[in-house]
Image (cartoon, rainbow, N blue to C red; front, side, top):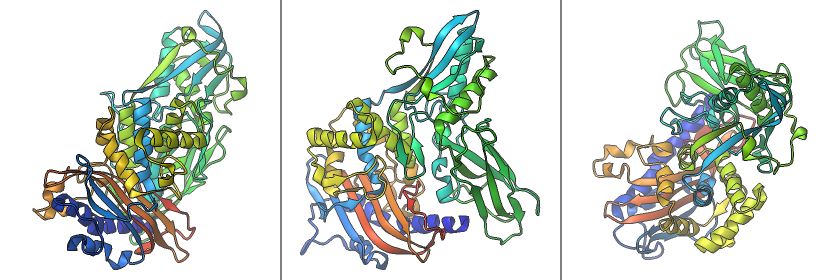
Length: 545
Protein backbone atom coordinates (compact mmCIF):
# COMPACT_ATOMS: atom_id res chain seq x y z
CA UNK A 1 0.00 0.00 0.00
CA UNK A 2 2.70 2.48 0.93
CA UNK A 3 4.52 1.93 -2.35
CA UNK A 4 1.32 2.79 -4.17
CA UNK A 5 0.81 5.91 -2.09
CA UNK A 6 4.36 6.95 -2.86
CA UNK A 7 3.75 6.51 -6.58
CA UNK A 8 0.62 8.61 -6.27
CA UNK A 9 2.42 11.46 -4.53
CA UNK A 10 5.32 11.49 -6.97
CA UNK A 11 3.01 11.22 -9.96
CA UNK A 12 0.81 14.13 -8.96
CA UNK A 13 3.84 16.25 -8.03
CA UNK A 14 5.35 15.54 -11.43
CA UNK A 15 2.19 16.65 -13.20
CA UNK A 16 2.09 19.88 -11.21
CA UNK A 17 5.73 20.76 -11.73
CA UNK A 18 5.83 20.01 -15.45
CA UNK A 19 2.48 21.40 -16.52
CA UNK A 20 0.63 23.72 -14.19
CA UNK A 21 3.46 25.95 -13.11
CA UNK A 22 4.07 26.62 -16.78
CA UNK A 23 0.73 28.43 -16.78
CA UNK A 24 1.26 30.27 -13.48
CA UNK A 25 4.81 31.33 -14.19
CA UNK A 26 3.72 32.20 -17.72
CA UNK A 27 1.05 34.52 -16.35
CA UNK A 28 3.67 36.07 -14.07
CA UNK A 29 5.80 36.89 -17.10
CA UNK A 30 3.30 37.90 -19.75
CA UNK A 31 0.30 39.74 -18.31
CA UNK A 32 0.72 43.16 -19.86
CA UNK A 33 -2.55 43.49 -21.77
CA UNK A 34 -6.08 42.19 -21.44
CA UNK A 35 -6.99 39.07 -23.40
CA UNK A 36 -10.48 37.57 -23.40
CA UNK A 37 -9.88 33.97 -24.35
CA UNK A 38 -12.00 32.91 -27.26
CA UNK A 39 -12.12 33.13 -31.00
CA UNK A 40 -9.50 35.63 -32.15
CA UNK A 41 -8.07 36.04 -28.63
CA UNK A 42 -6.14 32.88 -27.77
CA UNK A 43 -3.93 32.25 -24.78
CA UNK A 44 -0.20 32.61 -25.45
CA UNK A 45 1.02 29.47 -27.19
CA UNK A 46 3.06 28.12 -24.28
CA UNK A 47 0.08 28.47 -21.93
CA UNK A 48 -2.38 26.97 -24.42
CA UNK A 49 0.00 24.03 -24.84
CA UNK A 50 -0.64 23.04 -21.24
CA UNK A 51 -4.40 22.99 -21.72
CA UNK A 52 -3.87 20.86 -24.83
CA UNK A 53 -1.78 18.17 -23.10
CA UNK A 54 -3.12 14.64 -23.72
CA UNK A 55 -3.52 14.21 -19.97
CA UNK A 56 -6.17 16.95 -19.94
CA UNK A 57 -7.88 16.22 -23.27
CA UNK A 58 -11.23 15.41 -21.61
CA UNK A 59 -10.84 17.80 -18.69
CA UNK A 60 -12.93 20.89 -18.05
CA UNK A 61 -10.90 24.08 -17.70
CA UNK A 62 -11.70 27.31 -15.94
CA UNK A 63 -9.43 30.36 -15.69
CA UNK A 64 -9.73 33.98 -14.77
CA UNK A 65 -6.97 36.50 -14.15
CA UNK A 66 -7.90 39.96 -12.88
CA UNK A 67 -5.87 43.10 -12.18
CA UNK A 68 -6.64 43.68 -8.49
CA UNK A 69 -6.05 47.44 -8.76
CA UNK A 70 -8.20 48.18 -11.81
CA UNK A 71 -10.54 45.20 -11.97
CA UNK A 72 -9.53 44.60 -15.58
CA UNK A 73 -9.96 40.98 -16.67
CA UNK A 74 -6.72 39.77 -18.22
CA UNK A 75 -7.69 36.21 -19.09
CA UNK A 76 -11.09 34.56 -18.96
CA UNK A 77 -12.14 31.00 -19.75
CA UNK A 78 -15.40 29.54 -18.41
CA UNK A 79 -15.09 31.80 -15.36
CA UNK A 80 -18.83 31.60 -14.59
CA UNK A 81 -18.87 27.81 -14.53
CA UNK A 82 -19.04 26.12 -11.14
CA UNK A 83 -16.06 23.80 -10.78
CA UNK A 84 -14.87 21.45 -8.06
CA UNK A 85 -12.56 23.42 -5.79
CA UNK A 86 -10.68 20.95 -3.61
CA UNK A 87 -8.88 22.94 -0.93
CA UNK A 88 -9.10 26.24 -2.77
CA UNK A 89 -12.39 26.44 -0.88
CA UNK A 90 -10.33 27.18 2.26
CA UNK A 91 -9.76 30.73 0.98
CA UNK A 92 -13.34 31.54 1.99
CA UNK A 93 -13.52 29.71 5.33
CA UNK A 94 -10.20 31.03 6.60
CA UNK A 95 -10.72 34.51 5.18
CA UNK A 96 -14.07 34.86 6.94
CA UNK A 97 -12.71 33.38 10.18
CA UNK A 98 -9.89 35.93 10.14
CA UNK A 99 -12.43 38.66 9.55
CA UNK A 100 -14.93 37.70 12.24
CA UNK A 101 -12.73 36.11 14.90
CA UNK A 102 -9.94 38.59 14.23
CA UNK A 103 -6.32 37.94 13.32
CA UNK A 104 -5.36 38.75 16.93
CA UNK A 105 -7.95 36.43 18.47
CA UNK A 106 -6.48 34.13 21.10
CA UNK A 107 -8.26 31.01 22.29
CA UNK A 108 -8.68 30.94 26.05
CA UNK A 109 -9.25 27.52 27.59
CA UNK A 110 -10.25 27.83 31.28
CA UNK A 111 -10.52 25.32 34.11
CA UNK A 112 -13.10 25.65 36.90
CA UNK A 113 -13.49 23.80 40.21
CA UNK A 114 -17.04 22.72 41.13
CA UNK A 115 -17.17 22.19 44.87
CA UNK A 116 -15.55 23.31 48.07
CA UNK A 117 -11.79 23.62 48.49
CA UNK A 118 -10.40 23.10 51.99
CA UNK A 119 -6.75 22.61 52.91
CA UNK A 120 -5.87 22.12 49.25
CA UNK A 121 -8.52 19.42 48.70
CA UNK A 122 -11.24 19.98 46.10
CA UNK A 123 -14.30 18.08 47.26
CA UNK A 124 -15.91 18.13 43.83
CA UNK A 125 -15.18 18.15 40.13
CA UNK A 126 -12.56 19.89 38.00
CA UNK A 127 -13.84 21.02 34.59
CA UNK A 128 -11.80 22.02 31.55
CA UNK A 129 -13.98 24.06 29.18
CA UNK A 130 -12.89 23.50 25.57
CA UNK A 131 -12.49 26.67 23.50
CA UNK A 132 -11.91 25.23 20.03
CA UNK A 133 -8.15 25.74 20.31
CA UNK A 134 -6.84 23.48 17.55
CA UNK A 135 -3.36 23.19 19.07
CA UNK A 136 -3.93 23.30 22.86
CA UNK A 137 -0.33 24.37 23.40
CA UNK A 138 1.02 21.36 21.53
CA UNK A 139 2.59 23.41 18.74
CA UNK A 140 3.74 26.49 20.65
CA UNK A 141 7.42 27.31 20.17
CA UNK A 142 9.56 29.14 22.75
CA UNK A 143 8.92 32.44 20.95
CA UNK A 144 5.16 31.94 21.30
CA UNK A 145 4.44 31.20 17.64
CA UNK A 146 3.04 27.97 16.20
CA UNK A 147 5.37 25.28 14.88
CA UNK A 148 4.59 24.20 11.30
CA UNK A 149 6.56 21.61 9.33
CA UNK A 150 6.88 21.21 5.57
CA UNK A 151 5.10 17.84 5.67
CA UNK A 152 2.28 17.86 8.21
CA UNK A 153 1.46 14.71 10.16
CA UNK A 154 -2.28 15.08 9.55
CA UNK A 155 -1.81 13.45 6.15
CA UNK A 156 1.04 11.08 6.99
CA UNK A 157 -1.00 7.99 6.13
CA UNK A 158 -2.16 9.44 2.80
CA UNK A 159 1.17 10.61 1.42
CA UNK A 160 3.46 8.11 3.07
CA UNK A 161 5.40 10.21 5.57
CA UNK A 162 5.49 13.41 7.62
CA UNK A 163 7.81 15.66 9.56
CA UNK A 164 6.90 16.09 13.22
CA UNK A 165 7.20 19.34 15.11
CA UNK A 166 9.78 19.51 17.89
CA UNK A 167 7.17 20.64 20.41
CA UNK A 168 5.44 18.73 23.24
CA UNK A 169 1.93 17.65 22.16
CA UNK A 170 0.75 17.70 25.79
CA UNK A 171 2.27 21.06 26.74
CA UNK A 172 -1.08 22.84 27.12
CA UNK A 173 -2.52 20.26 29.49
CA UNK A 174 0.67 20.28 31.53
CA UNK A 175 0.58 24.09 31.75
CA UNK A 176 -2.98 24.00 33.08
CA UNK A 177 -2.03 21.31 35.60
CA UNK A 178 0.90 23.37 36.88
CA UNK A 179 -1.35 26.40 37.30
CA UNK A 180 -3.80 24.34 39.33
CA UNK A 181 -1.03 23.01 41.55
CA UNK A 182 0.33 26.55 41.99
CA UNK A 183 -3.14 27.67 43.08
CA UNK A 184 -2.82 25.34 46.05
CA UNK A 185 -4.92 22.39 44.87
CA UNK A 186 -3.32 19.17 46.12
CA UNK A 187 -6.14 16.72 45.58
CA UNK A 188 -9.31 16.37 43.49
CA UNK A 189 -11.83 14.00 45.07
CA UNK A 190 -14.46 14.30 42.36
CA UNK A 191 -14.38 13.86 38.60
CA UNK A 192 -12.24 15.52 35.95
CA UNK A 193 -14.47 16.49 33.03
CA UNK A 194 -13.97 17.99 29.57
CA UNK A 195 -16.78 20.39 28.69
CA UNK A 196 -16.91 20.05 24.90
CA UNK A 197 -20.27 21.76 24.30
CA UNK A 198 -18.91 24.81 22.45
CA UNK A 199 -20.34 23.60 19.15
CA UNK A 200 -22.24 20.61 17.80
CA UNK A 201 -19.74 17.88 16.86
CA UNK A 202 -19.42 17.38 13.12
CA UNK A 203 -18.32 14.33 11.20
CA UNK A 204 -15.02 14.53 9.38
CA UNK A 205 -15.14 12.41 6.22
CA UNK A 206 -16.58 9.37 7.94
CA UNK A 207 -13.52 9.11 10.21
CA UNK A 208 -14.74 10.63 13.49
CA UNK A 209 -16.73 13.44 15.04
CA UNK A 210 -14.70 16.60 15.54
CA UNK A 211 -15.20 18.33 18.89
CA UNK A 212 -13.80 21.59 20.29
CA UNK A 213 -11.10 19.77 22.30
CA UNK A 214 -7.88 18.65 20.60
CA UNK A 215 -4.83 16.60 21.57
CA UNK A 216 -1.94 16.50 19.07
CA UNK A 217 -4.43 17.36 16.30
CA UNK A 218 -6.36 14.25 17.41
CA UNK A 219 -3.56 11.93 16.33
CA UNK A 220 -1.17 9.46 17.92
CA UNK A 221 2.02 9.66 15.87
CA UNK A 222 3.88 6.44 15.11
CA UNK A 223 7.64 7.00 14.80
CA UNK A 224 9.44 4.27 12.85
CA UNK A 225 13.19 3.69 12.68
CA UNK A 226 14.99 0.76 10.98
CA UNK A 227 16.33 -2.18 12.97
CA UNK A 228 18.67 -5.09 12.32
CA UNK A 229 17.95 -7.31 9.33
CA UNK A 230 15.35 -9.94 10.16
CA UNK A 231 14.60 -8.31 13.50
CA UNK A 232 11.91 -5.91 14.65
CA UNK A 233 11.92 -2.36 13.35
CA UNK A 234 12.07 0.34 16.03
CA UNK A 235 8.58 1.72 16.69
CA UNK A 236 7.80 4.51 19.15
CA UNK A 237 4.82 6.83 19.46
CA UNK A 238 3.64 10.16 20.81
CA UNK A 239 2.00 11.43 22.88
CA UNK A 240 2.51 8.84 25.60
CA UNK A 241 -0.61 8.28 27.69
CA UNK A 242 -2.57 5.54 29.36
CA UNK A 243 -5.34 6.48 26.92
CA UNK A 244 -3.67 4.60 24.06
CA UNK A 245 -0.60 2.46 23.47
CA UNK A 246 1.05 1.05 20.36
CA UNK A 247 2.28 -2.49 19.84
CA UNK A 248 4.33 -3.52 16.82
CA UNK A 249 5.09 -6.59 14.76
CA UNK A 250 6.80 -4.56 12.03
CA UNK A 251 9.92 -6.41 10.92
CA UNK A 252 12.92 -5.62 8.76
CA UNK A 253 12.83 -7.22 5.31
CA UNK A 254 15.46 -7.79 2.57
CA UNK A 255 16.37 -5.01 0.15
CA UNK A 256 13.99 -4.83 -2.78
CA UNK A 257 10.97 -5.90 -0.74
CA UNK A 258 7.88 -3.71 -1.09
CA UNK A 259 7.22 -1.46 1.88
CA UNK A 260 4.19 -2.64 3.83
CA UNK A 261 3.22 -0.67 6.94
CA UNK A 262 -0.30 -1.16 8.21
CA UNK A 263 -2.04 0.35 11.25
CA UNK A 264 -4.62 -1.94 12.80
CA UNK A 265 -7.03 -0.34 13.25
CA UNK A 266 -6.25 3.09 11.81
CA UNK A 267 -9.35 4.45 13.60
CA UNK A 268 -9.44 2.70 17.00
CA UNK A 269 -12.84 2.56 18.69
CA UNK A 270 -11.54 1.72 22.17
CA UNK A 271 -10.73 5.18 23.54
CA UNK A 272 -11.98 5.52 27.10
CA UNK A 273 -11.42 1.81 27.78
CA UNK A 274 -8.59 0.08 29.65
CA UNK A 275 -5.91 -1.42 27.42
CA UNK A 276 -6.79 0.58 24.32
CA UNK A 277 -4.06 0.10 21.74
CA UNK A 278 -3.24 -0.19 18.06
CA UNK A 279 -0.94 -2.52 16.17
CA UNK A 280 1.74 -1.64 13.62
CA UNK A 281 2.18 -4.54 11.21
CA UNK A 282 4.12 -5.34 8.06
CA UNK A 283 7.62 -5.22 6.63
CA UNK A 284 10.20 -2.44 6.35
CA UNK A 285 12.74 -3.05 3.56
CA UNK A 286 16.38 -2.71 4.56
CA UNK A 287 17.03 -0.32 1.66
CA UNK A 288 13.89 1.78 2.03
CA UNK A 289 14.37 5.56 2.05
CA UNK A 290 11.39 7.48 3.49
CA UNK A 291 9.62 9.62 0.93
CA UNK A 292 9.36 13.43 1.22
CA UNK A 293 12.05 13.81 3.90
CA UNK A 294 14.49 11.26 2.40
CA UNK A 295 15.50 10.28 5.91
CA UNK A 296 14.15 8.54 8.98
CA UNK A 297 12.00 8.58 10.98
CA UNK A 298 9.09 7.28 8.93
CA UNK A 299 5.79 8.59 10.30
CA UNK A 300 2.30 7.14 10.46
CA UNK A 301 -0.64 8.10 12.70
CA UNK A 302 -3.62 6.58 14.49
CA UNK A 303 -6.71 8.79 14.66
CA UNK A 304 -8.00 9.72 18.12
CA UNK A 305 -11.67 9.21 17.35
CA UNK A 306 -12.87 10.15 20.86
CA UNK A 307 -10.80 13.26 21.66
CA UNK A 308 -12.83 14.14 24.76
CA UNK A 309 -11.91 10.80 26.36
CA UNK A 310 -8.24 11.05 25.39
CA UNK A 311 -8.04 14.67 26.60
CA UNK A 312 -9.57 13.77 29.96
CA UNK A 313 -6.96 11.05 30.51
CA UNK A 314 -4.13 13.34 29.39
CA UNK A 315 -5.34 16.06 31.77
CA UNK A 316 -5.56 13.72 34.75
CA UNK A 317 -2.08 12.41 34.01
CA UNK A 318 -0.78 15.98 33.76
CA UNK A 319 -2.36 16.81 37.12
CA UNK A 320 -0.72 13.83 38.78
CA UNK A 321 2.60 14.76 37.18
CA UNK A 322 2.20 18.24 38.71
CA UNK A 323 1.65 16.71 42.14
CA UNK A 324 -2.14 16.86 42.25
CA UNK A 325 -3.77 13.63 43.45
CA UNK A 326 -6.90 12.69 41.51
CA UNK A 327 -9.42 10.19 42.85
CA UNK A 328 -11.09 9.61 39.50
CA UNK A 329 -9.73 6.81 37.34
CA UNK A 330 -7.55 8.27 34.58
CA UNK A 331 -8.74 6.01 31.77
CA UNK A 332 -12.47 6.20 31.22
CA UNK A 333 -15.28 7.87 29.35
CA UNK A 334 -15.66 11.60 29.77
CA UNK A 335 -18.59 12.01 32.21
CA UNK A 336 -20.30 14.84 30.35
CA UNK A 337 -23.61 14.04 32.07
CA UNK A 338 -22.17 15.61 35.23
CA UNK A 339 -21.58 19.02 33.65
CA UNK A 340 -23.38 22.08 35.02
CA UNK A 341 -25.47 24.37 32.77
CA UNK A 342 -23.28 26.06 30.15
CA UNK A 343 -23.84 29.53 31.63
CA UNK A 344 -23.02 28.41 35.14
CA UNK A 345 -19.32 29.32 35.09
CA UNK A 346 -17.89 32.41 36.78
CA UNK A 347 -14.59 34.16 36.16
CA UNK A 348 -14.33 34.52 39.92
CA UNK A 349 -13.94 30.76 40.30
CA UNK A 350 -11.61 30.17 37.34
CA UNK A 351 -8.50 28.41 38.60
CA UNK A 352 -6.39 28.12 35.43
CA UNK A 353 -6.40 29.21 31.80
CA UNK A 354 -4.44 28.37 28.65
CA UNK A 355 -4.01 31.24 26.17
CA UNK A 356 -3.12 30.42 22.57
CA UNK A 357 -1.03 32.21 19.94
CA UNK A 358 -3.06 34.57 17.70
CA UNK A 359 -5.46 33.13 15.16
CA UNK A 360 -3.30 34.58 12.37
CA UNK A 361 -0.79 31.83 13.23
CA UNK A 362 -3.53 29.21 12.94
CA UNK A 363 -4.50 30.62 9.53
CA UNK A 364 -0.90 30.12 8.38
CA UNK A 365 -0.89 26.57 9.67
CA UNK A 366 -4.18 25.74 7.94
CA UNK A 367 -3.43 27.35 4.59
CA UNK A 368 0.28 26.56 4.29
CA UNK A 369 -0.19 22.79 4.76
CA UNK A 370 -3.91 22.58 3.86
CA UNK A 371 -5.06 21.33 7.26
CA UNK A 372 -8.57 20.07 6.58
CA UNK A 373 -9.87 19.67 10.14
CA UNK A 374 -8.51 23.13 10.95
CA UNK A 375 -10.48 24.65 8.08
CA UNK A 376 -13.67 22.81 9.00
CA UNK A 377 -13.35 23.88 12.62
CA UNK A 378 -12.60 27.46 11.57
CA UNK A 379 -15.86 27.56 9.63
CA UNK A 380 -17.78 26.44 12.74
CA UNK A 381 -15.89 29.00 14.85
CA UNK A 382 -16.90 31.66 12.31
CA UNK A 383 -20.46 30.44 12.78
CA UNK A 384 -20.20 31.06 16.53
CA UNK A 385 -19.47 34.72 15.81
CA UNK A 386 -22.74 34.77 13.86
CA UNK A 387 -24.77 33.19 16.64
CA UNK A 388 -24.90 29.60 15.35
CA UNK A 389 -23.07 26.49 16.58
CA UNK A 390 -23.22 23.76 13.93
CA UNK A 391 -21.62 23.07 10.56
CA UNK A 392 -24.89 23.35 8.54
CA UNK A 393 -25.81 26.60 10.26
CA UNK A 394 -22.29 27.99 9.76
CA UNK A 395 -22.54 27.26 6.03
CA UNK A 396 -25.77 29.23 5.90
CA UNK A 397 -24.21 32.10 7.85
CA UNK A 398 -21.31 32.08 5.39
CA UNK A 399 -23.75 32.51 2.49
CA UNK A 400 -25.27 35.55 4.16
CA UNK A 401 -21.87 37.11 4.82
CA UNK A 402 -20.56 36.50 1.30
CA UNK A 403 -23.70 38.06 -0.16
CA UNK A 404 -23.85 41.03 2.19
CA UNK A 405 -20.16 41.92 2.45
CA UNK A 406 -18.70 40.65 -0.84
CA UNK A 407 -21.72 40.68 -3.16
CA UNK A 408 -21.12 37.02 -4.03
CA UNK A 409 -24.46 35.24 -4.61
CA UNK A 410 -25.04 31.72 -3.30
CA UNK A 411 -25.62 30.52 -6.88
CA UNK A 412 -21.89 30.98 -7.56
CA UNK A 413 -20.76 28.19 -5.23
CA UNK A 414 -21.83 25.22 -3.15
CA UNK A 415 -19.74 24.12 -0.17
CA UNK A 416 -20.36 21.06 1.99
CA UNK A 417 -17.78 21.83 4.69
CA UNK A 418 -15.01 24.31 5.44
CA UNK A 419 -12.15 22.49 3.76
CA UNK A 420 -13.35 21.69 0.24
CA UNK A 421 -14.42 18.11 0.67
CA UNK A 422 -16.34 16.14 -1.91
CA UNK A 423 -18.57 18.06 -4.29
CA UNK A 424 -17.59 21.57 -3.16
CA UNK A 425 -17.79 23.89 -6.18
CA UNK A 426 -17.30 27.57 -7.01
CA UNK A 427 -16.89 29.75 -10.08
CA UNK A 428 -13.44 31.18 -10.83
CA UNK A 429 -15.00 34.65 -10.98
CA UNK A 430 -16.45 34.38 -7.45
CA UNK A 431 -13.06 33.36 -6.07
CA UNK A 432 -11.35 36.29 -7.76
CA UNK A 433 -13.99 38.70 -6.52
CA UNK A 434 -13.37 37.50 -2.98
CA UNK A 435 -9.60 37.77 -3.39
CA UNK A 436 -9.83 41.25 -4.85
CA UNK A 437 -12.30 42.59 -2.28
CA UNK A 438 -10.22 41.24 0.61
CA UNK A 439 -7.62 43.89 -0.15
CA UNK A 440 -9.91 46.46 1.43
CA UNK A 441 -10.30 44.53 4.68
CA UNK A 442 -8.24 45.07 7.82
CA UNK A 443 -7.34 41.37 7.92
CA UNK A 444 -6.04 41.26 4.35
CA UNK A 445 -2.35 41.18 5.29
CA UNK A 446 -2.61 38.23 7.70
CA UNK A 447 -4.68 36.41 5.07
CA UNK A 448 -2.13 37.16 2.35
CA UNK A 449 0.78 36.10 4.58
CA UNK A 450 -0.91 32.79 5.36
CA UNK A 451 -0.90 31.66 1.72
CA UNK A 452 1.75 29.26 0.39
CA UNK A 453 4.48 31.08 -1.54
CA UNK A 454 6.01 29.79 -4.78
CA UNK A 455 9.42 28.16 -4.16
CA UNK A 456 9.42 29.50 -0.58
CA UNK A 457 7.04 27.64 1.75
CA UNK A 458 3.90 25.64 2.27
CA UNK A 459 2.43 23.52 -0.49
CA UNK A 460 4.32 25.56 -3.11
CA UNK A 461 7.67 25.50 -1.36
CA UNK A 462 8.89 22.38 -3.15
CA UNK A 463 8.12 23.80 -6.63
CA UNK A 464 11.50 25.05 -7.82
CA UNK A 465 12.17 23.50 -11.24
CA UNK A 466 11.16 26.68 -13.08
CA UNK A 467 14.13 28.50 -11.51
CA UNK A 468 16.49 26.67 -13.85
CA UNK A 469 15.28 29.11 -16.52
CA UNK A 470 16.82 32.50 -15.70
CA UNK A 471 13.99 34.33 -17.44
CA UNK A 472 11.50 32.73 -15.02
CA UNK A 473 13.52 32.64 -11.80
CA UNK A 474 12.09 36.00 -10.73
CA UNK A 475 8.71 34.37 -10.14
CA UNK A 476 10.06 32.94 -6.86
CA UNK A 477 8.31 34.63 -3.96
CA UNK A 478 5.88 36.46 -6.27
CA UNK A 479 3.10 33.88 -6.46
CA UNK A 480 0.86 33.44 -3.39
CA UNK A 481 -1.67 30.66 -3.84
CA UNK A 482 -3.97 28.16 -2.22
CA UNK A 483 -3.71 24.81 -3.85
CA UNK A 484 -6.37 22.14 -4.18
CA UNK A 485 -6.44 18.57 -5.41
CA UNK A 486 -9.34 16.15 -5.30
CA UNK A 487 -8.44 12.59 -6.30
CA UNK A 488 -10.54 9.45 -6.32
CA UNK A 489 -9.71 5.88 -7.23
CA UNK A 490 -10.74 4.08 -10.41
CA UNK A 491 -11.63 0.40 -10.41
CA UNK A 492 -8.33 -0.46 -12.10
CA UNK A 493 -6.33 1.13 -9.28
CA UNK A 494 -5.45 4.30 -11.18
CA UNK A 495 -6.40 7.77 -10.03
CA UNK A 496 -9.10 10.04 -11.36
CA UNK A 497 -8.30 13.72 -11.00
CA UNK A 498 -11.65 15.21 -10.09
CA UNK A 499 -10.18 18.63 -9.51
CA UNK A 500 -6.88 20.43 -9.57
CA UNK A 501 -6.93 24.09 -8.70
CA UNK A 502 -4.78 27.07 -7.82
CA UNK A 503 -6.02 30.48 -6.73
CA UNK A 504 -4.39 33.50 -5.18
CA UNK A 505 -2.21 36.44 -6.11
CA UNK A 506 0.56 37.00 -8.65
CA UNK A 507 2.92 39.97 -8.58
CA UNK A 508 3.68 40.00 -12.29
CA UNK A 509 6.95 40.83 -13.98
CA UNK A 510 5.17 43.79 -15.57
CA UNK A 511 4.44 45.26 -12.13
CA UNK A 512 0.77 44.42 -12.20
CA UNK A 513 -0.88 42.86 -9.16
CA UNK A 514 -3.15 40.02 -10.21
CA UNK A 515 -5.75 37.75 -8.66
CA UNK A 516 -6.24 34.45 -10.39
CA UNK A 517 -8.22 31.21 -10.23
CA UNK A 518 -7.19 28.25 -12.38
CA UNK A 519 -9.08 24.94 -12.47
CA UNK A 520 -9.25 21.67 -14.32
CA UNK A 521 -11.96 19.13 -13.49
CA UNK A 522 -12.78 15.56 -14.42
CA UNK A 523 -9.52 14.14 -15.75
CA UNK A 524 -10.48 10.43 -15.82
CA UNK A 525 -7.05 8.92 -15.26
CA UNK A 526 -3.59 10.11 -14.28
CA UNK A 527 -1.21 7.79 -16.08
CA UNK A 528 1.30 5.94 -13.95
CA UNK A 529 -0.32 6.52 -10.56
CA UNK A 530 -2.09 3.86 -8.55
CA UNK A 531 -3.71 3.59 -5.14
CA UNK A 532 -4.69 0.90 -2.70
CA UNK A 533 -7.08 -1.72 -4.07
CA UNK A 534 -9.42 -0.63 -1.29
CA UNK A 535 -10.29 2.29 -3.54
CA UNK A 536 -10.43 4.69 -0.60
CA UNK A 537 -10.84 8.22 -1.92
CA UNK A 538 -7.86 10.50 -1.64
CA UNK A 539 -8.75 14.14 -1.02
CA UNK A 540 -6.47 17.12 -0.82
CA UNK A 541 -2.93 15.84 -0.94
CA UNK A 542 -1.40 18.08 1.72
CA UNK A 543 1.47 19.14 -0.46
CA UNK A 544 -1.38 21.18 -1.76
CA UNK A 545 -1.25 21.10 -5.52
